[in-house]
Structure formats: structure tokens, C-alpha cells
Length: 163
Image 1 (spheres, rainbow, N blue to C red):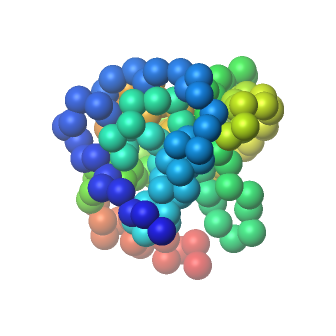
Image 2 (cartoon, helix red, strand yellow):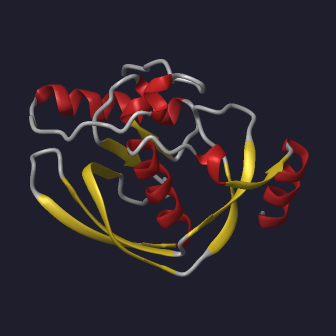
Image 3 (cartoon, rainbow, N blue to C red):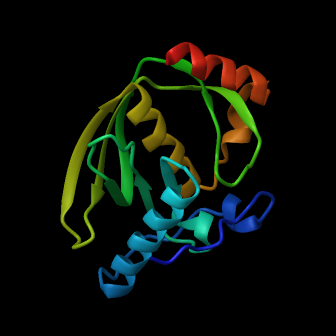
């Protein structure tokens, strides 16, 4: 288990568009494992390679609770629909939470760790997480999309309502 340091804002790697992955090898598999370990250790549900200091088009989403881990290599958004405003946070912005508007639905394609392409459709929270991570790969940070900052007390109150 390798936990990497999470790159924090305002590091320029976070605002730089990433490079396409062309080598699908053991180093890529190690990066994916390290990213997942780092994300889980930080209580995240998604992480992008720039957040661990690698400027390549690799991201992971893991909603837990029996859901499959989504590994996205060279992801491309094919279609989006709808619009929902929800609270988001980001591992690179500790203690910052805000309402962000994102599509409710996404259809995307990406490559597996062996280079094979796949397509995926997602809705609601899963779509939000996927789009948040793809934004990271394009150098777009969630703080630029915040409609309203939410303090920690409000976030905790909202989470309690859901329980």
C-alpha cells in the first residue's frame, strides 16, 4: 500500500491540461493502485493523476458500497444531459465546499488499464464524480465552478438529514 502526497491548490500541475496516456504498462498499473490507496486513505470518492503529481489523463472514481471502481484512462465525454446543483469538495482543497452545477447524466468513453476502450453511462452522484475528475484532467478546478461556498456546519447538517 503506497500513499502518495496529495497536491494542494495553488500548484500549477492542477491547472495544466494533462497528456494522453500512450504506454499501458506496469508503471500505469502501479499508479492506479497508488491513486486508489491515496484516495481511500483520504476519504475521497475520486482522484485524478495531477492530484498525486502526475500530469497524465488518468482518474479513478470509487463510490464504495459494493460499486465497481471506475478507472478512466484518456476519458472523453460523449454526451451530457440535465442539470443539478449539489455540494462538492475536493482533496486538493481541504476545508472548501461549495454548490456546483453539473449535468445529471453523462455518457463517456475511456480506456482500461490494458488499453481497451469502454463506454459508461452514469447519473446523479456518479456522473458528478466522473465529471469532476475529468475536469481535473483538463486543468479545470471545482473552485472555479462554485456558485456558493458552503461552510462545514451546513455541510454536516445536510449530511445528517440524509442519514
